[in-house]
Structures are given as C-alpha cells and as structure tokens.
Length: 223
Image (cartoon, rainbow, N blue to C red; front, side, top):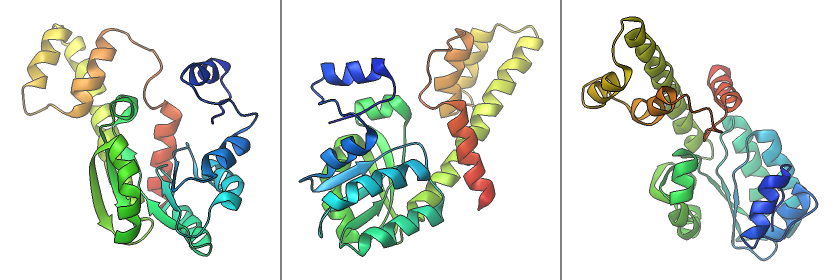
C-alpha cells in the first residue's frame, strides 16, 4: 500500500503493484497492519509523528518500528518512549547512501537501540543496507552519527564545488581536473559522484534536495 502527493510517483508505484491509498495516514495504517517490522523513512520528525499517529493503533507488543528518518535526537527519543509504552521495539536507524544506495540495497545504517530490537529488525534492514553499525543502545545514538556524517558530507560537497570553480577560473580543463583529483589526496565521495553532474550541468532531481541539506544542518546547529 502507498500514497504520494505526486501523481506521477503514485502511478509508478501502482505500476509496480502497490495498492494506492487516499492519504498518507491510510497508507501508514495499511502498512502497519499485521507487519512485524514497520520502516519509517520520511523527511522530518513532524511527518514521522504523523505516520506514528496513524500506525500506532495497528502496532502491537513485539512489533518493531525502524526509524530511518533524519531527525533531532530528542524527537527520536520521544517517539521511542511513546512506542515502548505499547511494547513496540524502537530502532533508531538513519541511513546514508542516497537514492542510488536505496535502489541498490547498499545503504549504510547507524543503529541506536537495544541489541534484541536490532536483531528483530535486521532481516528487513539487511534487504536495504550493505552495512549496519550498532552505534549505541539509546534511541538518538543513530541520529548522532547521522549528524556527524551530514556535517562531513556537506562540507565535502561545498568544497568540491569551490575547488572546481577555482580550477575553471584558472583556465584548466575541468574534466581533466576531475580525473586528476579523483586519483589524488583531494578526492572524496562527493567529488567522485557530484562533480560529474556539475560538469554536465545535470540538474535532474538529486537524491537529496537542497532544503533537506539545510534541514539537516539546522538539526546540527540546534544540538
């Protein structure tokens, strides 16, 4: 079952066999009904709370909620307390790897939860991740690692763009410059994966919109 505000995205889901729902709340309830592990991966803590509000009536003791969104640690911990009162196991497990990693099932996941909760969630997480790190026993520990990752990733992205611009102003062949830095100490994941898009003026929808990057940095600043 699924719902999307984009008609095009909804049509693609239906073509893949997803049953269309009239609202996000209906989709959340349908997903939670009878499931052992419910994965939430939405853009904000507010959206996550809306999903939990809709799905909580279908979740029972022993079910697992895998919280894969990037959110403030306090909001994550509050959701965990609320669900744990129902006997639901909460796994704080944000991910990294972008749309390409999601499609390929090669995301990197950072789990903050009790060992038993992670063990129950692992079969589902294994299907979407190639690496799962258990970083702590508290909900919020996974979010802390994600904050560190986002700071490093976005600094590298900005640095890659500035470095490429510097080379262009110096009159260098930008594509040759890309190849050189990709094999030198200045290389990074952002250089290898994002600079080709810059070189091609490829403004197609990215794996993460700019406003999501701003949202993530706001979480970091609030900490």
